[in-house]
Amino acid sequence: MIDKKLMLLPGIKKILLILTGLALMQAVAIVGQACFLSTAIVNLWSGNGLVSQFKWILLFFLCYAIRHLVNFYREELLDKYAAEQAGNIRGKLLKKIFYLGPIVIQSNGTGNTTTMALEGIDQVEDYLHLIFAKVTTLMIVPWVVLVAIFYFDWESAAFLLGIFPVIIIFMIVLGYAAQSRADRQYASYQMLSNHFVDSLRGIDTLKYFGLSKRYANSIFKTSEKFRKATLNTLKIAILSTFALDFFTTLSIAVVAVFLGLRLIDGHMVLYPALTILILSPEYFLPIRDFSSDYHATLNGKNALGAINKILDVLEPTILPLSIDKWNNSSRLKFSNLNFSYAENKPALKKINLAVSGYKKVGIIGLSGSGKSTLINILSGFLDPNEAVIRFNDEETTSFAQKDWQKQLIYIPQNPYIFKGTLRDNVVFYQPEATMEQVKQAVEVVGLNELVSELPMGLDTQIGEGARALSGGQAQRIALARAFLDKQRKVLLFDEPTAHLDIETEVELKERMLPLMENHLVFFATHRLHWMKEMDLILVMDKGEVVESGTLDELRQSDGAFAELTRSLRRR
Figure 1: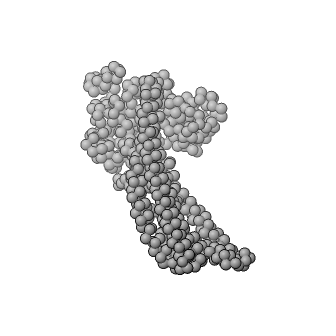
Figure 2: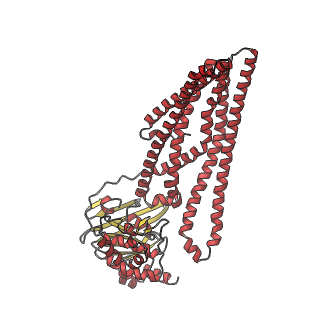
Figure 3: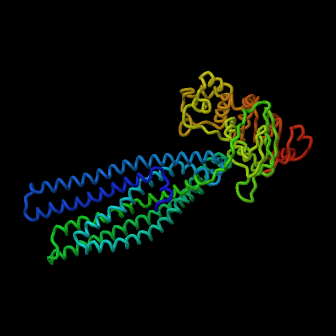
């Protein structure tokens, strides 16, 4: 039930020590409550006045207050600790995802990774809060209460001690069933998350081909699987709660019956019998509390396990290099570059390239030819399985070099527009940019028309539920970011116009070409007209560079580029 890695959390020993002390204090308060309440009731039963019982009633309320103050302090302590640790785990997860790049997204799915970083962390926070409180209480309170019952009557204590393992064994059996159902539920949840995000991404294409309504059935079936998995899990949880309540209530009833019979026979006096009867429900209360939150802890444990799988992915040890800022005399060369997403499925094979100074390198090929994978490797998001990479005279095996990545501007197919003002989105990489610089960038990339339409101009909220933008407008914002950054001299474009209509693309092209001057540019696309602007063209097919050269050289050779041209024009 407890993930072993919880014991590695910072400050956990101190927290467990405090919780143990609080549980012991709570147990003593529970016993005190029972004893003082029983004393007051027995004295009243014996004919003593109510005023004379004020001392015992006051002590009862004092124990009651201590018990609930302990609960309050424990909740506050665990709220703070769970929130702090959940924040740390989220930070580690996001840092790991950022470092590992697309490979972790592709292996886990975009939707699953997103929900893991959002709802998954919330479930982990609940798990941390619940599991420590429930376990420490379960370890301390029942046994202190049992010792008190044993002091008053060993027979009742022996019966309660004997029934406790039976309940535990029954709960273990149901727990394994609940774990199995919870695992299926979490797997269905992962599938639904990925399916939903993929559906949103492809909704335009589905509508274009008239398949959006038909595809709705697929979403419905996936959500139904998740609904059924959730209901099956809840059935086990409800059965578990019912069974536990039944057994504990029956056990308390048995104790009460035997206490009553012994009172009638005169083998026991009222005070110990009443105290035992009050303490018996408290003996079972911790395990009932544990059972009531068992499903929530299972969800949190599953989420934590999924997060730890990502956190446990080993990061390659890469010797950091000191790489000068890219200039007109800089050189980059890599050879025998190979990469596979899975064993025996190479995505890139024996890629060789040498470039120097400011140059525009076009990477062209059909979908699945390896263009985006090569861009991701150049950005350092992916590490090649093997490669010899040289920056000037420095040699390494990966592009995941801080001095290299600080020089990159990456513009993907779908630039990320976060929730904030238009100005905040434009100055994302250059927050110190002045208003004049922002206005100049907006004008250069052709965003003036958009700004004039917005109710608050550059201060209008956009992204994530605010004002929606078209694909062309999002690309212009990405270009404005690039324009503002005068320091970074390496541009990586990954199909930046793939989802734009031809009119928007032609207009954007006029804005993009000036930005490419005095830069090293890697431009991955399947649009042929961009190749006229490239100094060097790499033709890719099935993960290999099958041909390279200038546009004129490729046209004259009538090789792979010519065949690709004919193939694309037939579409």
